[in-house]
Length: 108
Image (cartoon, rainbow, N blue to C red; front, side, top):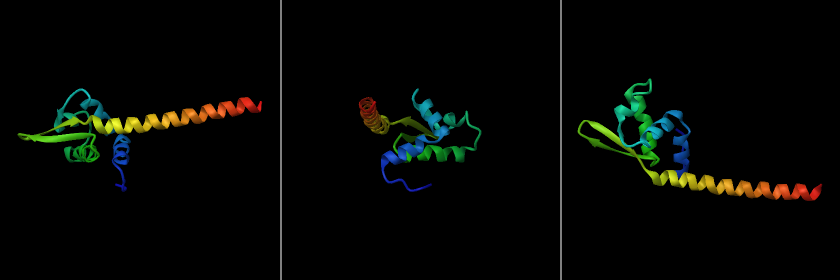
């Protein structure tokens, strides 16, 4: 895996994979065991566990051992950081496009 320097970089890397996004969608409904999360995917449990590790390493989820199972739940704070960054970028580009529109209106 390439080197990512910030927690936000790691979060976007984790979100870039459709399997991990599907896991997060399921966890939005509530916590679940790793084995339950793996059911819809056609991959070996060790391969699936790598996806869980990426999500955990970037802080999008946390997991804990309960008996013989590992349970996962989402962490809202990392999502909030990503959403805040995207909102700031959206505002910046909206302002740029508004300025461009004004410029084009003036040059007509």
